[in-house]
Length: 153
Image (cartoon, rainbow, N blue to C red):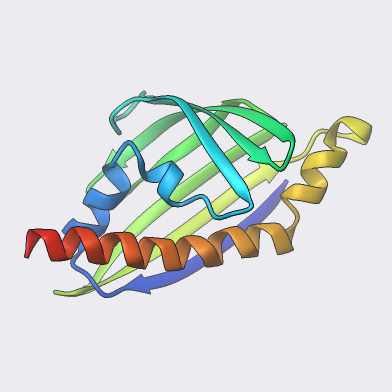
């Protein structure tokens, strides 16, 4: 099993960060180029809700289905039920650091398939790829939450 952890802050209240992540279109908003997310189905975030999508890495499609759990005011977990990796469990946690400052913690525990079957995911989901993805998500989250928080202000 491998682990990846990423933390950043957003200059917005916890409620705005939570609302942004509860939007069913958030996956597309948080997927940076050159990756393209095609969402087939994304149920409103709740315990047991499902997301079905394909991540396109150039011409390579990776179909993914996840189920959400531990949905609460401070975050949620998505777990791959079928997809490219042997396993993937992603915990999203939100912590208010002040009235207009929220910390976002992403913690992922994942495992690749052995041998040739896991070669592609070992390349795409190696530490540098995850660091790129979550650094981009930090910037995209800040931008998306600022729009949402500004609309509500």
